[in-house]
Amino acid sequence: QVQLVESGGGLVQAGGSLRLSCTASGKIFSINAMGWYRQAPGNQRELVATITSGGSTNYADSVKGRFTISRDNAKNMVYLQMNSLKPEDLAVYYCTCTVRTTAAGPEYRYWGQGTQVTVSS
Image (cartoon, rainbow, N blue to C red; front, side, top):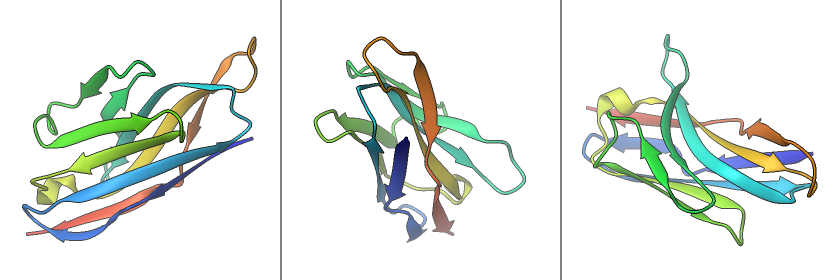
């Protein structure tokens, strides 16, 4: 019912920048929190950053000061600006959001398919 599509991943040298985008579409009444998680090879999926509908943000300590999350509520989009990338940022990055599909219904969490970020040293 709700689809999330990420874009913007790729290969970048250490110290470089990338901007990830994610668009939510489908049966959406409202979107509460949006965020980004990542999963590096051999590791569990971990939180990168989240943003509430009101704009409050939360970051993993490992990305504070380097990554910035933002959202466009009118377009149902969330972004992740990644600066000063490090080899340890290499991972598949997943977009997620909690969506209410009807006014009185519950919230559900949805995930995108992931986008690869590779940082070369």
